Image (cartoon, rainbow, N blue to C red; front, side):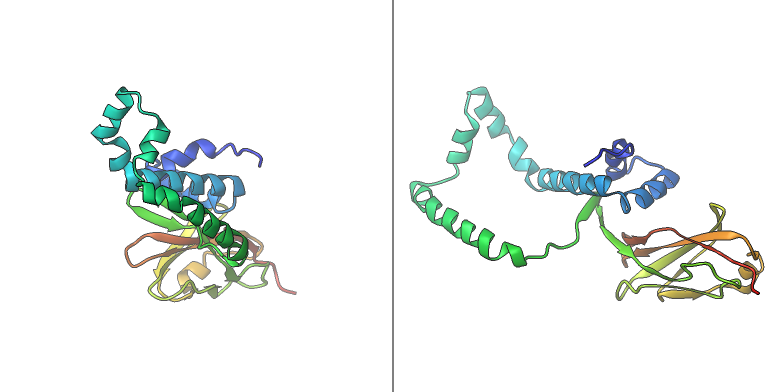
Length: 217
């Protein structure tokens, strides 16, 4: 997989070291970049293991064993009784059965990304309308529903500059008349939607879709 020039931003994003503007741009990027998406999954797994097992990994008795020259094999072996060692071949056989029989039918859950104490699921929102050139200023923007208890934030841009933003619990909004009057025939616009959980955690985001208001015949 080809490396991405934005990879250096992953750790800063995960540990909340980016300002709001850079964080927003990187969110738009990694939802559409397979390389950064995969790297986010890898780092999330590593951070989760450290958070869950950190006390065991770094407790003092392990440091003492290291000073005594204990090998990693000896550390692992110390966790098993002779009876448990005797059952290892049985466990290995069961594991092979699971791998060859059940894994082909298993569909993993969407990956989760660790960001401070919050989690962001790697999901995307499908925008329904408008997604192509239209002849008149739009009155309604609609997108795919992401489920119950979700709050959406919609952004509309004029040549990259934010024209308007609002929040709703519906999967559509009706554009206010004062905003419609600011949109001009022949101009290009874009929009995107983000979904948040009741706790305020970002759970899904759409790609930014561009459309043009063409002059009718």
